Image (cartoon, rainbow, N blue to C red; front, top):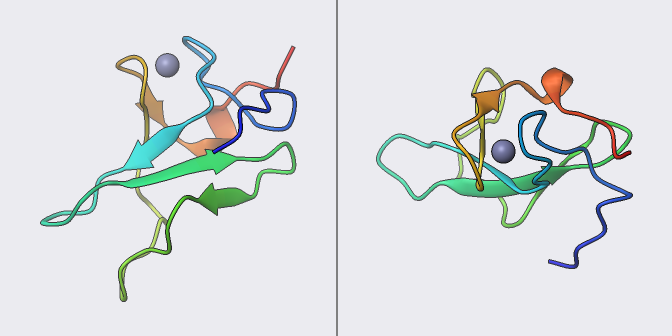
Length: 74
Ligand SMILES: [Zn+2]
């Protein structure tokens, strides 16, 4: 994915803009969140899976939380 930090929300701890969610028994799903709050998945989720209610995990540090907690680009 292209790095456009101006367009994506970042980790409130380290500023990284790529996150993942854990899907039990499956590979994690990687995503970004754009400045309008839309979740942009790198690949479609497996059938029957949803991001609703799942924590976002920063790919660069130990932070995890919700999309609403992400930081706007400076
Ligand atoms: Zn981070």
